[in-house]
Length: 297
Image (cartoon, rainbow, N blue to C red; front, side, top):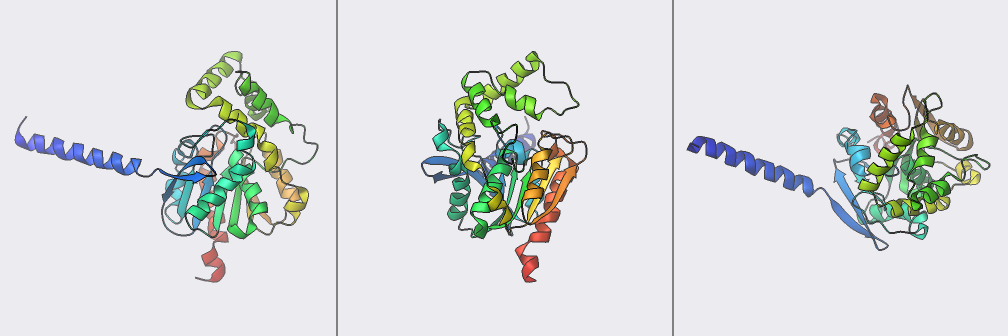
């Protein structure tokens, strides 16, 4: 190898090492009541907190879909792995979840010395975002509740979290959730499809931690009274054929100050995040509810 080629290879390797090092340094951690929470921060401007869905992570939910990069052009984006997920701590038992998941958002804002933020959640993250909003309105600029909404009393799927927890604890995977999220006009998953999905789940997650998340879900329930008192601007965002669309519409009917509900054409619960209208709707809503706009800055 001649000296010029050696020099080019050396520079390329050095550049790759530097790039990988910078990427690794994105990960930061905080202690939230004894549970390690992994988070990243990107961009400058008004803070936007992203809360991902069940079995996902900030990488799968927000990085992979390009949401972080898009929003970081105008905002200070803070994304984190929910406890029980990703690179965050994974305690077992429902007592470690529920309200503690909303508490993680509070601790993250405190840790970063942020007084108020826009809160964006999808699926499980939407449940957490809604709970955070009604319990901590003084810390919320605006809220996006994606792929989820409000489950009113008497909802036929009110026991779904317990059924998912029991299925996970028995080693039977996510059958109840997969069946729930399958659009009505599509065939139910086959046994082979369920086995393949559950094998992938078990290989990338702590199944008993996920069961704990489901065991704690009842603590995240919001009441009609809380929804009626809401003064925070809220956007509902859901796929057109997502079976959970009904919960988004129920939220609009029950909650004050829901400024809009955006229905993503042809999208189901899984595909909604990659829908071209998903990030666009969030960007438009954040721009409309920004503190800078309301103060005339």
